[in-house]
Amino acid sequence: MATGGARCLDQSPARRYGLTLYFAETASGALMLLTGAEIVIRCLQEEKVDYLFGYPGGSVLYIYDELFKQDKVRHVLVRHEQAAIHAADGYARSTDKVGVALVTSGPGATNAVTGIATAYCDSIPLVVISGQVPSAAIGQDAFQEVDTVGITRPCVKHNFLIRDVRDIASTIKKAFYLARTGRPGPVLVDIPKDITAQKCAFEYPQTVSMRSYNPVVKGHQGQIKKALQLLLEAKRPMIYAGGGVVLGDASEKLTALVRKLGFPCTNTLMGLGGYPATDRQFVGMLGMHGNYEANMGMHYCDVLLAVGARFDDRVIGSPAHFASEPRRIIHIDIDPSSISKRVKVDVPIVGDVGEVLGEMLAMLDGTPERLDQDSLAVWWKQIDEWRRRDCLKFNQGEELIKPQYVVQKLWEVTGGDAFVTSDVGQHQMWAAQYYKFDKPRRWINSGGLGTMGFGLPAAMGVQLAHPGSQVACVTGEASIQMNIQELATCKQFRLPIKVVMLNNRYLGMVRQWQEIFHGNRYSESYMDSLPDFSRLAEAYGHVGIRVDKPGDVEGALREAFSRKSDLVFLDFQVDQTENVYPMVQGGKGLTDMILSAEDL
Image 1 (tube, rainbow, N blue to C red):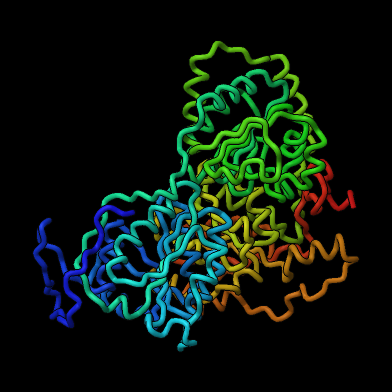
Image 2: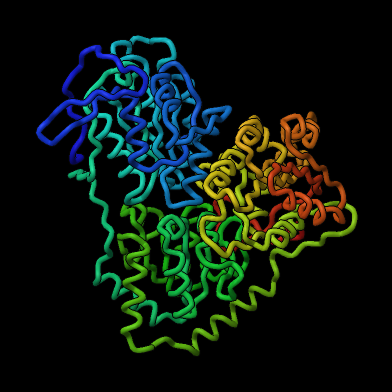
């Protein structure tokens, strides 16, 4: 239970005049008598929430009225509730803070579900406050009533329906605690409208103690020693790091361990930036569209250290194929349910990845050097042979813009120091492959759910969190239209995002699969009624640039990023026939890679 909390002293219809506050004397001193709506805002202030992303509606009007009367929590008015969640999500991913959103009941809550599921799949800490119909109307099919708790239960870490105004403070405290601790995730708090109008005394809890929730932080010392022993005995080691390294702020410790051991390191899509991409020991992203050397090293290593990763189907392909090559596996994860879920491991270590890596480094410092350097040199020779396949090479040519070239130039123009959000599809994979992320929390994308429409609102949250930074949204002509209305939000809040659209006039990844696996039958994947995006951006009050020639790519990017105060929408007309390679077909193993069209 939460320590402290709200104690109800008076439920009378006493009113507030202006900003004058009522007080009630108690044994612990003077406590403010506040409405439920006031308590919600005070809780957000106590949690030091900077931005609240939301959209008003009938069930949350008391809360919005209290927002109007203060200036500590800044509200960002989105144009769709899905965008509110994605913006809070982008804010959270690019910082170490909890993202917060506010939506109304009924369609407001259901519109938010896609964003909530997106955050849940990628373990992003959010607190979503939803309005609900008055308590007496719940279950009566009232106007704009849905069972928000029931609908969101499968895609939240936890959710609450508040039945008593006295529970608001302690519940919101629990929500923030649950969202940010252990394996992070979204937590929803559903508040009926009448509860936000009732009054009670307010006191925000300072601590939280929940008997049913006690995440393990410290790793087992014996298991860490076993893991270190395995690593020191390895002949063909590999370190495989996922999004848990980024979310756990453990990138520096991972980098120190990798460099100290001299082992190759690969990152998942969600883990990019967890280890510097420009470092020689980085062998690239692995998985369905991963580098040849990363996938081969992952498959043929004899000792594998998995850190904050979950052996996802897009990472290892077929578990049976992955198990065909013997190896010893060490798995570090804060979530015990993720360990041995898809792949049986030899040394499980449950704990915070930063804490465990710190312990491992300390033990390594106190251990005599016993690495087999000769075997490691042979292993690196093999990896360098795989590298020479140069699986990401492409030919730019003079006629058509290659999408890979745009991303390469984006990396050069921004000095590799931009925050890059993406939508979902071919452009997402090209951004992951060709933008070299050297820092964590710079790559913001929807991995687990694969949500089109994520990129632009996520970029809004990132830009608000980092107002002086370069923020680019890499998108496609299909994905951008899922939440293109947020260009209005960008205008209202003067967000100088650079939208980098790789426009191939197709649902690109769908077309690629139809080409490879469905005999070139392009069923409903062609976009034959597209707007003039540059003029559309201008209609929203932004700068629009259309680029048709390869020679104009770099100049357009430099022009865009020189405009520090403007959102610039770059419409790059790219080669329609370009596919994402390498590629591992669904259900196949990591070594069954299609490296180019010639392999088909």
